Amino acid sequence: MLKRKVLLVDDDEGIRAVLEYNLKEVGLDVISAPSAEGGWKLFRSDAPDLVITDVRMAGMSGMDLLSRIRSADPAALVIVITAYGTIQQAVEAMKKGAYDYVTKPFDRDALKMTVRKALEFASVRQENRQLRTELKGRFSLSRLVGKSPAMQALSKLLARVASTDATVLIQGETGTGKELVARALHYNSPRSSANFVTVNCTAIPRELLESELFGHVKGAFTGATGPKTGKFELADGGTVFLDEIGDIDVGLQKKLLRVLQEREIDKVGDRAPHPVEVRVIAATNQPLNHLVETGAFRKDLYYRLNVFPITMPPLRERREDIPLLIDHFLEKLGATGIRVTENALALLAAHDWPGNVRELENTIERALILRNNEEEIGVKEITLGQVENNTHGPKALDIPEGGIVLEEVEKRLIVEALRKTGGNQSAAARLLGISRQTLIYRIQKHAIRGGEA
Image (cartoon, rainbow, N blue to C red; front, side, top):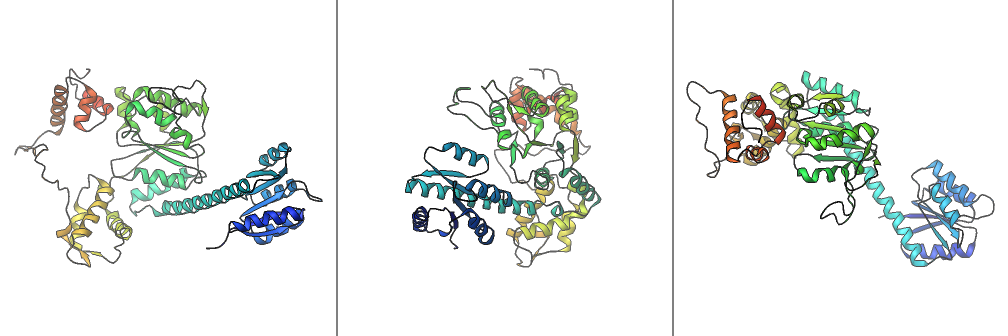
């Protein structure tokens, strides 16, 4: 492993020798210069990981050297050395971009700790850069799999909106890749170097969601033993992805609307608003326009979110992409040499894929595990829409020869769920595996009496 290189600049030979000894003692490669002019030359030729420079020197000052270095490389790390009692100089240096400062006479341990923290910061920053570069490649718009007209149209839309700050509403069935598209929008935008923060609005209990989104101050409520940073604050400068936005409680929708309008958050228990600068991408598998009609979703919030709508096509409407997706999943699973037989492909192409791309990926992964032939996946390895027997689960419905009206079945299930829960909508929604807002919409759609409880 290469040693980290430190450039030491000081016109006092004695101090330079002491600093060099202490830095080499902790395993650093030290190069030094007796003047700021010499330090500038070494910085350009040797590209050090860290610069330590005195402020007061004959000729060019340490402040001038700091300004030159930061102009040439805004990410360069510089620690300045100031005399005891000249803290104002240190403050000025920090304003000009210095990472930290040490005072003379300096404590050896304090010096080593400051240098170590600076180099650790540099390492973390470099790792973050590499990770973001990898993520940008992974979520490149060119990697969206599909040659169907629907996917080609989607790619063009994404390319146009990615570079903007427009709020995006992604709608589509479960498993169509809404989060993948949201990440692609972020990592192909000017915000790609900042955070992409996901909020699953369904997974977080309603009473905790406000704190998760906006944060809280100490003592805001029972159990708030310390302050909490919310998701919007974490994403400042980046993107917040609100998944399943249709499940947000109506009361919280008003506060979310304020964030979109005013670009500031109200932490729970805090009177002062906090400015945030984020891009919002929301997703839902529910028809938000229908929820608006029933009053389960605010109309003004819907229009704020629906600035640039994107609809994800279900897999059954782009069957020609199935072979490409299969190849993609085989590569992802490290099985590029495995062939899918023509009969198996025909079976996969004929399926309606209610779980969409996610269901196809799970099917291919399961087929790889089940295959008997090391070189191919056949019809026997393909399992579609099969549900394991569960003695504790509901019995299979018996569809009569004359057929059945699905709307009536749905209505009867809702009525039964409300009966079992004494009209408690939240409890009935949990029994049915849907959100309360969706239940309200369906109660009104079927004109179910007693659904107001």
